[in-house]
Picture 1 (cartoon, each protein chain N blue to C red):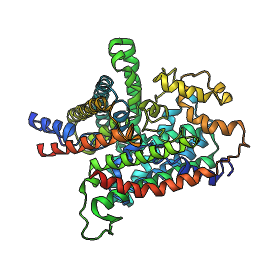
Picture 2: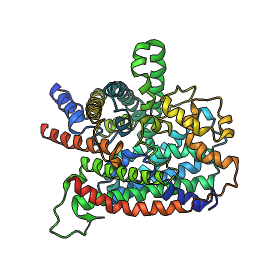
Picture 3: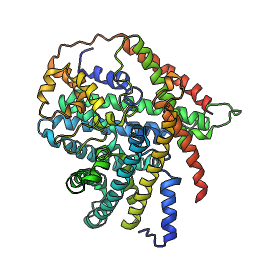
Picture 4: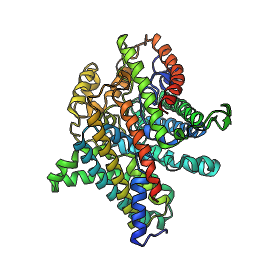
Amino acid sequence: MNNITSIRDLLILMVGSSLVSNVVLSQFLGLCPFLGVSKKIKTAAGMGAAVIFVITLASAVAGVIYKFILIPLNITFLQTIVFILVIAALVQFVEMFLKKAIPSLYEALGVYLPLITTNCAVLGVALTNVQKNYGIGTGVVNGFATALGFTIAIVILAGIREKMEYNDIPQSFKGMPSVLLTAGLMAIAFCGFSGLL
Amino acid sequence: MKQNSVAERLFNGVIKENPTLVLTLGMCPTLAVTTSAMNGLGMGLTTTAVLALSNLIISLLRKFIPNRVRIPAFIVIVASFVTMVQLLLEAYLPSLNVALGVYIPLIVVNCIILGRAESYAYHNPPIPSFFDGLGMGIGFSIALTIIGAVRELLGTGAVFGYHILPDGYVNINIFVLAPGAFFVLAMLTAIQNFVKNKLAAKGKDVSKVGSGCSEDCASCSDTACSKRFYDAGAPVKNPEVNAAKKDKAKTEPKKAEEKSEEKSEETAEKKVKDKAGAVTEENNAEEVKTDEPEETEEKAEVKETEEKEGGEKDE
């Protein structure tokens, strides 16, 4: 186990996961919500919060299941099946729970939850945690940081899109192409963070 | 061409409803692994294997899978095949396995696979379903290989590892890095928009062009890439989109009737109705769209050249 103990290492991990290898801009995970829900800053922030919530929770649950069920039973090759089912069920369960228990939070996050049920970012983080041999605690931190990176990216993109809305763009570039070009330029900017580590 | 025949299914997947170039589905792996033509081809073929086999199995089991838990059932079937393919790759093609990394297990959440299961395999017999998956997979592979080749050519001056550009060419490194993927996809969708506008001006049906991830995320969720795990009265996610789709759904009343218990599900089934609905209702519907394929072929050719030009412009 590659257990990271000191706070410094954890901080480096957080910067690495959220900025340097940003989940959307350099790993292309969670592209659907990134492109689809980034029209307004408000919805983008809501989506980001839902993603932080779900990914953090999912990496904790996936980590626990991997360590206490899959490894002892020696069935780690089933990780993909187990993780996707657990994550999908977890998201639905969280949605039901929020609806009953904390309606105000459900109002804020609820609409976004179904959109992340089988989002590749969530599964991607769970699998990365396993591949890199992170312990449960480190995995949760990594998940949180990754989701934070997603939120940063989607909020910035939404901000740029709000400004771009009334610009005069060539007919063929209206809509998705201009958004993708923006994302590409953002990705170049995020490349600059690689000097941080 | 007869509906549901093997050739029609293959043609449909490769040209008419090419998942990447026409529908814009499954963009995450498309962008992530196309740093070289070889990686693109590897990813494409891996996805093809999973797609064809899972379509076959889902189609065989379609009478036994209850409607309400079909999504979890699909996911289990797809995930099983992905695990098998991953183990095979680890054993026989370790270098490809390393190159594709986490994107192999992520095939499970590829919109194309769940989308095909939901919209075709669950409603059609095994043989056409298998070839539907095969056709879609081949279309995906071709698209990924082309994108990979363009990126590799611009980024390193080589295709499939063979140097073809003259020595004087200065490599545009950014094309094999992450930003390059966004630029290439931006050009691709721009060309798609261009063709779509042209076709729309001619009065052709363009509802399918770019109907995947490139539109609203809500439409993506309706085509099953981020669908609910179970569907007990899923709420209306995006009223405008739903309304538009419901209008379309009305054209297939019989199918809509079957599904009337789950009204909000209708939108998600839009694709099903487009395809399966037409199939189940009347089998005699011979398609007369003979001139459209030529258009798309032409487009594919134009695409490559334009993409290069566009890519260079970006730089």
